[in-house]
Amino acid sequence: MGSKIKQKLGLGSEWDFWFDHPHTNEIINEKRKIQSYYFIFDCEVNDIEYVSKSISAVLGYSSSEFNMAKFFESIHPEDLQYCNECEHNSFQISNHIFYKEIFKYIISYSFRLKTKEGNYLTIKQEYQTIETDEYGRMLRNFVHHEVIDSYEKRSEFDFQIIDKIKNRPVNFEKKFKLTKREVEILDLINQGFQTKEISEQLNLSDHTVKTHRKNILQKTQSSSLIQVLNKVRI
Image (cartoon, helix red, strand yellow):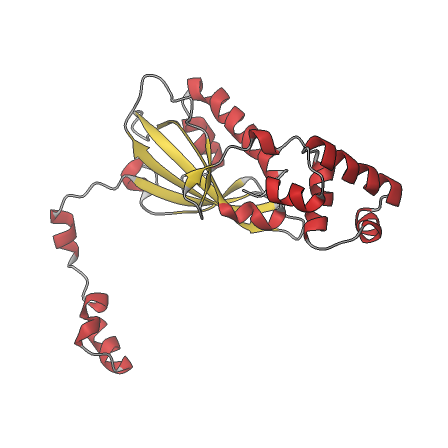
């Protein structure tokens, strides 16, 4: 099949690597154990939209068996509270990120998941937003699960927000002294909106917007909003 397509497209032998895949038996003989799978999470309905077939090699479930109910049921009871805290932190952080920048970050932490056979595996979960609405609210997340070595004590740096562009963890603690409303206003300022336009956009009085601008400067210890924007960007 591959050679026919290659011939039809008029491609030379330099494209052989693209079309000539190893035979299935050769792949099986390599005895490579799949250690990861992924799924698409629909934030609107709070359920899994799609699961990669490789989940069966890791957890033993078929793609159709694995939904959010099964996911929560499979989390180790001792890890549920930690997962809740991580999700709460990520939710708080996402509310304070410029909506156009939310795609820059990966949220990562680990926990134990029970396989269909009843054994527990330590999973490193990494997810990133792949779709938002016009207000920056998450609609869909790409979630990747990878089996990692088990540990007796979880690292204090286990929960991380990773900048995909810089490929390093980000410390958000000093960046989110601002309220959600202040971040909304700062986001509009970043887009070039003036005070009157912001007041109309957010249905606020000019005085309220000016008060928020003043509070933003004070909280970030900045002398100008340009300086603020430089500080809050990662």
